[in-house]
Image (cartoon, rainbow, N blue to C red; front, side, top):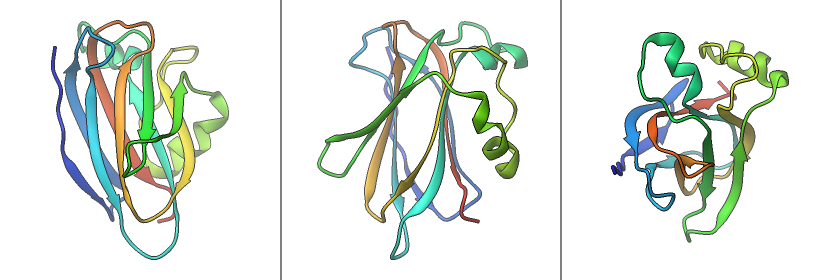
Length: 140
């Protein structure tokens, strides 16, 4: 079981690229703390990747990742399990690698205000494995 935490300023095209094992206990996972800078919201692409990592030779991937976004008070403001092919244009816009068609990787696009947020990656099925959190600024 592993938990990681890092602080990232949202000022870059690829904001965070975090790769760590995700714990088998659903309450443990990979966390990424990030701060949105500026005075207004930024549109971001959040990806929680597991199955598609196998394409790149990663063994023991998280089979069904879920991303959960918390605000600075710890309240859940968004969560997503799986991804939709209609996000392909967002992936392309930021230069993110393609996800395997039909995979259970997670991704979502949403506006975030300039406050601290925590992104949590866990197994939607309480599974464990290697996972990756990616955060991209779509407003650049």
